[in-house]
Length: 142
Image (cartoon, rainbow, N blue to C red):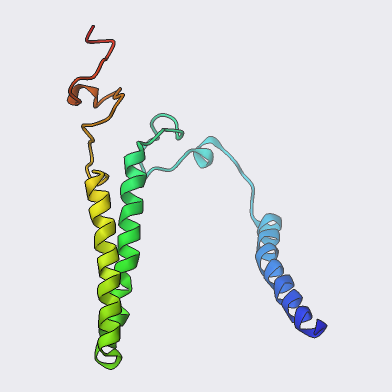
């Protein structure tokens, strides 16, 4: 019984060594000549503008997460389509239920208007898009 745990510990030790040994070798052998050009942020060959700590709108993340959810789920269709003839009617019904669940999720997201890029129904709209939102109480308008 303990022999099985020994094998696991050996693999954990080998994993740790394979991670830290190259880092140690790099630290010992690589030249260390820091200067402002090397420390500057690289942006595709362009000069950096402003701070890197910029707050992005949550819509970027919501749309990306919705895309990932549906994209990953649709990937499951390809293996099913390849072996569809061998699986029979039960697999067809199961895939129909799976697609129905995806469509219900898509309808939910669409109904909540999470797929709209600029939401017009923001309760307390401020900032760049506040002029697009009808009936907002901005301090500029008073």
